[in-house]
Length: 68
Image (cartoon, rainbow, N blue to C red; front, side, top):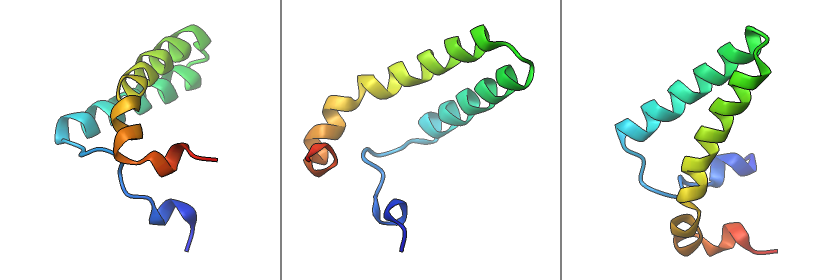
């Protein structure tokens, strides 16, 4: 069994957060395919800022993700 198959989602995902994540993924891939490094970078930064905003909640719920 691969490690990724044993990790549960760190926070409860809503349909909205899943859709937002998919939209960012599509936007990033489209920007890369179009050769727009600037647009890809901006989209990736925006996507990661949402993830980083949840880091403390994730750490509290799953401290084992942050050990070692």
